[in-house]
Image (cartoon, rainbow, N blue to C red; front, top):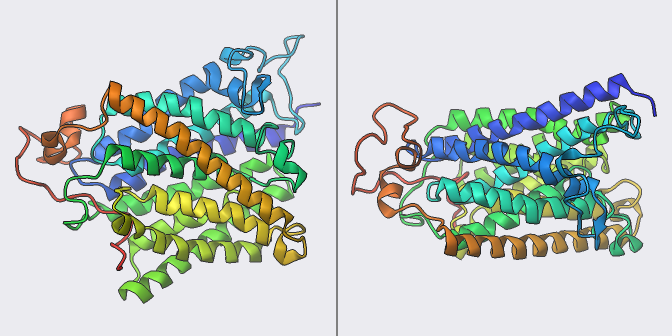
Length: 436
């Protein structure tokens, strides 16, 4: 295969856009935390970049794409350890994939997916976990949950068209409904349960400290998501264009869906709801970006916006403290986007005369992905709880995790000095507390 300079340039651009999503997430999450916790929240995203970028080169690529499949569950981590055999062919020339793109560019692109997936989980445990424990979790979870599920879905494993469910219909996950969002959302639920609730959760209002930061973060996420979805076409063609349009359309529709739900429920449409609607729409369209029509994307986004606006209130009814609504947005929208393909996929979807086969297989792979992520994350979380401990001390949580964990504060006069024994204003969710 000859080098395609246009496709290569597109994939390098897409990889850079996806990498930008993680700092964007840091802003999105950081704006929703307390002012005394914002640096720690942002550091969790930057920590994910630091850890995952290194281990992806060492064994992540081999486990995801490069190694011999082990039972359809993961690739041999040692076969292309350190990218040995993944960069050059036997003659010392760069390996070129079927799209005319050097394989090393694909490594870079896929590593950014792993990074953002791990970073997403951090929002479920804002304000209360040790940074050192988070970094160890990042290493273990990427290795035992992300890389295997990526292999299962995108490299011919258990959840791919070559797996046992492919006999029903070819599973569709264009850019990461199962691999990224269901995976991260289920992990966030486990961590929220294992780590426990913030002090004051359910008793005091928990407001974001900077909505402008959150909205800026949402804008950067939306911008970076074009690399996420359109980049998953792997070349600059019509499929990439369809993914781009669907990503824009579904996200816009989700904003409207969220705001309408807020207006009916709470009597007002909020900027925080708009920012959260952006993410809900982006998540929902991720698995479907290349499989639905633009009209189908509108339906997908509208439903996602409404569903997630309602779902974020479940934590108050069920009593788990998912601080920044990783479960309510990423798990719920990821499930809807993955299963919604069964209704809306052009050609194979139920609404397009394709029968129930696509719907059945989409539901199956969604459930299997949830179960795998729940089990693996539970084991990791409980081991770390026993060995390292998850939570900072009560004094640190009350006085400010930024100063205690990093020796810094985001704003002058906040978090300096000794910890106060008085409770500080607690963190707010991504939305107004849903009315029962």
